[in-house]
Image (cartoon, rainbow, N blue to C red):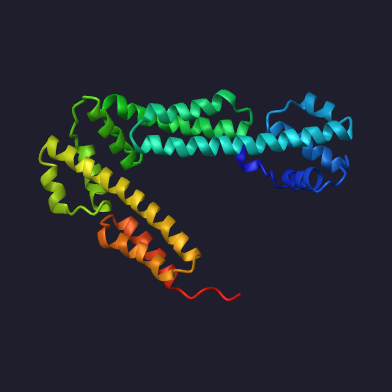
Length: 262
């Protein structure tokens, strides 16, 4: 369904009619657009056809359709942001609840479809939380976060070959060398410590870069380019996670580039 949906025409119509004050003309094309959009946002065909009997009710239909599009998008975006944070902390149940809350009120089929798809993915992660067994079909760090939380809840870590493979893959992405990784994988206790280090480094790196970028932007906008550059230099002085080092280096290069010509 999502591949067929294009809401730009109805948004453009709403801009002209609802915001710019242009009269709504119920041409054949406009009727077809409103009927199609009504179906896409969960308004029944009989209700839509009834609304198209007059310009006044058709305008109300247009307003309601665009409201559902915008409100649903905001609702799903907010739920996803919270879901990502909860998933990153290993709280799969809390992450799932965000999508259930969307589904409890959402009427737009496209948004329901997206929430249901996300919930199905999270359900696979919930299986990892319940059993402690990792899957080849799920993101590595999401699974590590779930296992970390599972350990905090009193469960023992099952140091399987699949988990060893995940830790070997993710350790370099956190700036941990092969020798340190192999030493840690010699015991379940070492593997737990390695897993915590990987997750901690990513969480701290994300916070560090986010704070530095906020300060950098403020200084840059105030005209203090040297101060803005120093924010990224400070990150690079301590950062060991390659992904976040690269992001800081890119920001620094951007500050050193000449401004675009007016």
